[in-house]
Image (tube, rainbow, N blue to C red; front, side):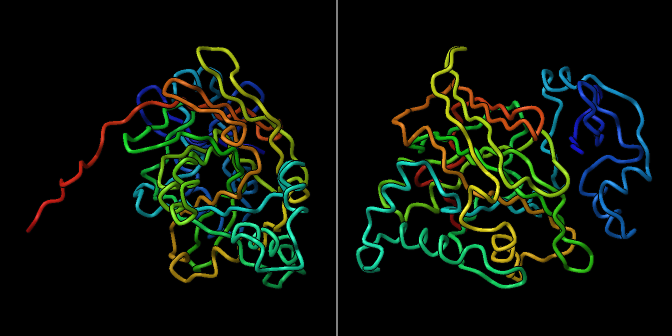
Length: 331
């Protein structure tokens, strides 16, 4: 089952069930978050809650996408209560990356970079026995709900950015119930847009490089994640394909289990505030930057996996600075 959030022509919001080329409205549902909280309160699954409510009017899915009326599949009415975060060094990577890993002196911990050391910890302890805490992954903060752009919309490129690089990933979508427990609704395609040039300058700039806009969706896939997923990551320039590569995910292609990644995010009490929404990116091993691609405004990112329905597409567009140097006021 796959859901979207979308707007009617007049701007009213709806939750819809994807049914081939149509989207059927879920009756009495104007947000995925409220639908999920109602399901938790009723002791139902999200799919069960939808079955209880029933389906209503049908809409042309292609038209909703073309008119950019499809929203991110999960949000919060107050963006400050939506936390966007992620983990890195979670996927096994390409053959060349693995070869490089094997060339390291794995018997000499001092010979490893911090990156390779964390990656090795994941390989050795990222998939513990169920109910056990495994190796802690790299973790980063990306922003709140204000940095999420809807599917099809432009990803703003700030003037201080040194790169505008895509990161095709899967994102876990969560709501914190009134009981303070995190509930996973499902998964969505994501573009964890980052600045790889800044990150390459010094690994301590990783935190800066992640403070960019992002997008996820258009669809929320309910249920468990298939262990192996194969899709594509593509960049178009002036309508032509500039770069394309296979995008692999699922636990068979990862050195951490989803359960382990979730534990190391939600173990922090400040992330368990009832009613809050969490969007957590699970990492990637596919980057056009690694192949020497330099993106520019006007380029279009396309990320797709068949099991997630329609692909996620976003263009790059320059943005005006929110603050200039010396622009902080004094009181």
